[in-house]
Length: 285
Image 1: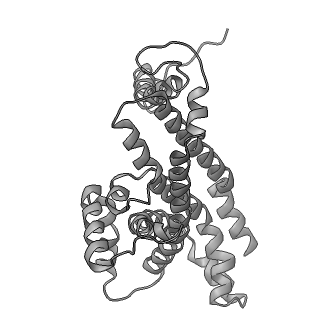
Image 2: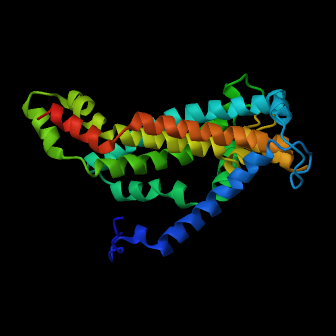
Image 3: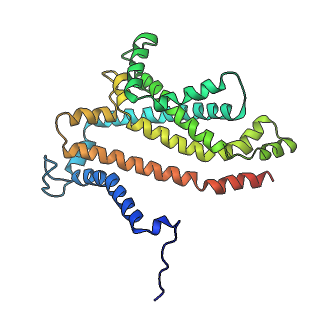
C-alpha cells in the first residue's frame, strides 16, 4: 500500500483543520435549506413535528391561484429587468473600460452606490421617487402594472452586471482588437467578432446575478409594489406572518429548485471562460 505523503506548507486543503472548517461552513450554509425542503413534505401543520411524508402541500401550492399569480409576476419582472440590466450594464461597463471622458471617476463611484447603499434606503428612495417624481399610474393592465417594480429592479441590478463585465474586460488583450482593425474590420465588426465573444461569459454571469437578485428581492419590491402587484417574496412574507406552514416551505422549495436549475443552465451555457477566450483569440490570429 502506497504511503500518503504529508501535506506541504501550501497544501491547505489537505490539512484536516481546513477540511473541518470547510465542512462546518457547508453545514452552516446548506443545512437550513435542506431542513426547509425536507419539512415541505411533512404531513403536519406544525413544522417542528414530523408526522409522515406527503405531497399535498405541493398540490395546495400549485392550486393556490394568488400564489401562482405572484410567481408569474416575479418571473416577468425578473426576466424584463434582467434583459434591461444586461444591456445597460454592458454598455456602461464598455464605456468605462474603453473611453476617457469628463466625469468618468464620478460615474464609476456612482455606479457602486446601489451596491453599497442599504436596501431599506433604496426602497424608501424608490417609494419617494414613484410618489413624487414619477407617479406610476394605478389600475394598468398586466404587465404594465409591473413597470414601477421593473424600473426599481433595474436600478439596483445593472451595477452588478457592469461590475462583472468590467472585471472580465480587464483581461482583454487589446492587441486582438488592433489585429482585427489591421485586417479591415470596422468598429461594429470588431465589437461583434472580437469584444463580444470575450465579454460573453460575463454577460451570462451578470444576467444570472441580476435575475436572482430580482427574483429574490423583497425590501425594494415591498416599497414599490401596489395592491395589485404582489410578487412571490411578498406573497410568501404575507403567508409567513400567520405561521410557517409546509405550504410555505413547498413554495420556498420550488423557488430554490428553480434557482438551482437556472444556475446550472447558466453555467452550462457559460462554459469554460478560458477556452472561450482562447477560441475568440484563435479566430483572429
